[in-house]
Length: 297
Image 1 (cartoon, rainbow, N blue to C red):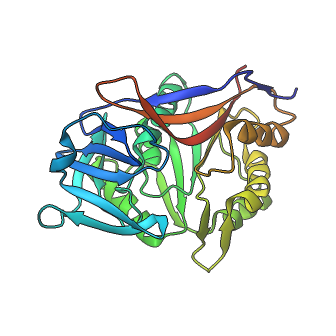
Image 2: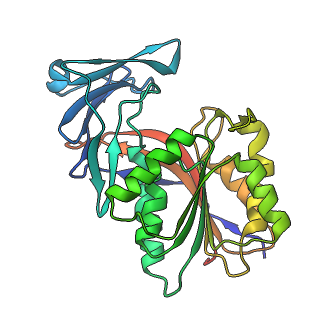
């Protein structure tokens, strides 16, 4: 009954859409378009030479300070206010945050597509748990696909942004529970309650703190949380999607972790990386690793 682990990795590629494109990359940077803004952000693994000419006319650039995830934005004009973006029918705000991203992670569009396809192909309503849900785009994709969603994040501000995005998407009245909690404590409590979910999205950071000061360290804490999430899956559950941004982990390692946690379930585990593909050439940038268990082999 153990799940079958795919023998080779999958690269889930995200290409350009109306409100996002990777225009070019190289010299440790990415040149992207978010809506009408051209944005330059650091990406140390881009070891090649850039090829486009647009680098000289960016609207915003992020200059790292110490840790590559922290720093400050510099703008060609006044600092932009949150601005509307969309992926298919889901709408959300772009924001220039202090952590070099813009309030969402565009490479996750490959996962959004997978979730949307899976939910739309099902004749039943799914009960979904989205842990570390941040500004809620994955939650809104699931809600738009007819699911009941529990959206959880440790940041009250992030949950507030997610609710704003739900209103922007016309999903303010959708069946979404918005929770500001520590993920481990909530999952442990749900296990004791006997709660069950048809699908779980698990997208933890490398390091974080819960609302009560609880410390999260990915490599130390992920195995226990993954096992607890496995205990929350309903007998007829559909999926568990695990994503991680960390240099010291791999998709195959995540697959092995899922295989251990779901040893009695059967099904299939696909694994690999998420990549952003440049708009006008076949070059891409791998930015995170994933493993996903599906009930169907």
